[in-house]
Length: 182
Image (cartoon, rainbow, N blue to C red):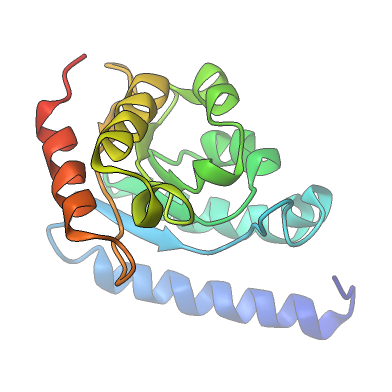
C-alpha cells in the first residue's frame, strides 16, 4: 500500500520474473496453468479493491494474456473473502476459479458467476469436513455442485484433506463426487 517507486519496481521485477517462467512452462504440453495467491482474509480482501485493481490487476492481465495466447486455460486460486475482485478475475479471463466459497455468500456467487467460469470446489475445511457427519458432507458437496456448476461453466470436484478429517468423511466426499448428477 506504499506508493514508493521501490514498491512499483519490485512489482515490475516480479512480473518480469513470472513472465520468463511462464515462457518455460508454456514449452510443455499443458492444457492450463495454475496461479495461486491468497488475497482474502475471513472477512475482506487484504487490501482495498481499488488498490488491488490499480497495482496488481495489470500484472495479472499480462500473465493471463500470455497463457491465453498460447491456447491454455487460466486457473486461479485464492483463499478468503475475495468477492469484490471476482468480476475482475472473470474480465481477466480466468477459466477455472478455486475460491473459498465457505467464507463468502456461495448462493450469490452462483447467481452472479456460475456459467461465466468453471469452479474448482473448495469444500468447507473449517466446519464441514472435520466435524460434520458423512451425510452432511455429501449434502454440502451436492449443494456446492447445484449452486456453482453449470453446463456452460462446469465444475471440478476437488477436496483438500488435512489430518483432522475423519476417514468416513473422506469416503463420503469421494462417494458424492461419483454419485452426483445434474
